[in-house]
Image 1 (cartoon, one colour):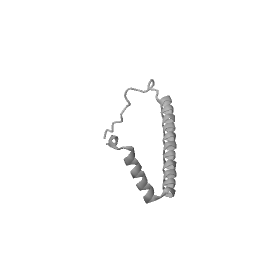
Image 2 (image 1 turned 90 degrees about the vertical axis):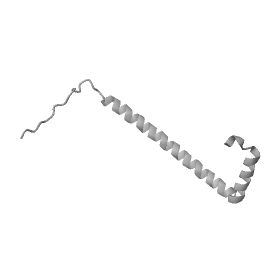
Image 3 (image 1 turned 120 degrees about the vertical axis):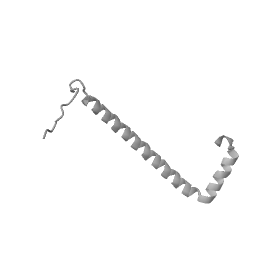
Image 4 (image 1 turned 135 degrees about the horizontal axis):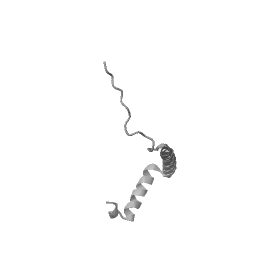
Length: 78
């Protein structure tokens, strides 16, 4: 779909966008979008680190050598 778009068509769209919004608004919009992307990436990196730490903690607790095969059940007679 985008492979059929030429450089001239992109330049025309760019000129129209600049004419509508102005360069000052586009600069502000660009910095806002850049900040949002940067924040999103840092949040994703923090989430990955937390997940890795949680997986590391869980692997230490997962010892199945001493776990009984069946737990006794309580039967109520009465």
